[in-house]
Image 1 (spheres, rainbow, N blue to C red):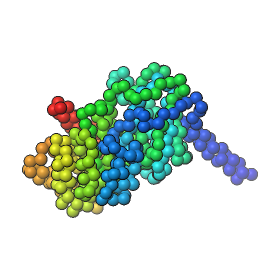
Image 2: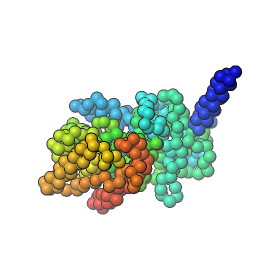
Image 3: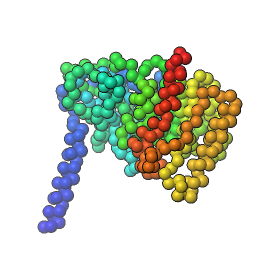
Image 4: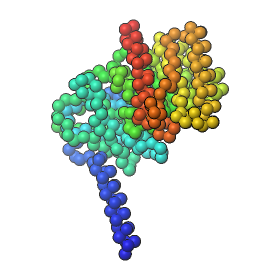
Length: 376
């Protein structure tokens, strides 16, 4: 009898938990209509000719690139949907490419989405998170309680999964149109970020909290995330791929944690020069490798990160002596926070770490954006 009662109790608890989780993302009713995101503004793409739309590199540019990198570039990290609506309800419907999962990152970051609204103060304000459901096709209702006035919105797409299609849902009687506010700006160039799993967004709890999305909201400039877990290497073919990006005013290069010492020591200069030849006026920011919180106590890590960073910085100094202009270096001066609590696992950043990362880069990137704007 006791075992029976315990089973009934556990079944009840699990059913309540499941219902509670589903209630945060209610099924879409017939009162909503959906518009394909192709007719809205898709932002933060490094290549204007990207097909499929929600991947980060067009199929035409894959010659000579590793299959592992191609897989990662199908993830939609950094890509956003901009639109304007007076709907009281904002919803979305999309299909995941992989339905990916890993134990050290929240599903809301891996394959979820989040919604921002542009306030009268000109700032983006977080509104809601779309919690992914147990299905490859996601039906999300972000909110049903808006004021019915015209507002500008931004939806950030998943960080560690891809999207096959994406539709925005509003009430049947509401407007849904291309944004009227030019934020991020459509003219004046983009910032392109290259790097590792941390650059891709590991392990932000939701898409809006990765560093490139934080910086995009702060700067009002498209920030194109080209980070790929395990593939942020400085091979020549990767540099040639990045060099083909459109309308670049700045590259941010953060590859150290995916590179062997010999690669950092011997390939950095050619990688940077490849970017410079393609975009002679673009600034290039070299970001030193993350200083892990446990580096002072782990005998292996003590030999890895500092040694790699020394070689990376030495190449930066060589490039400066060669006369390469608009080249900058940013070292880790607190990416993991004041108390070194900004990681999930000692390597990948938490939301705290991503905010600290963005805070360190923002002043320099703001100066670069201002300089470029004044020169046009």
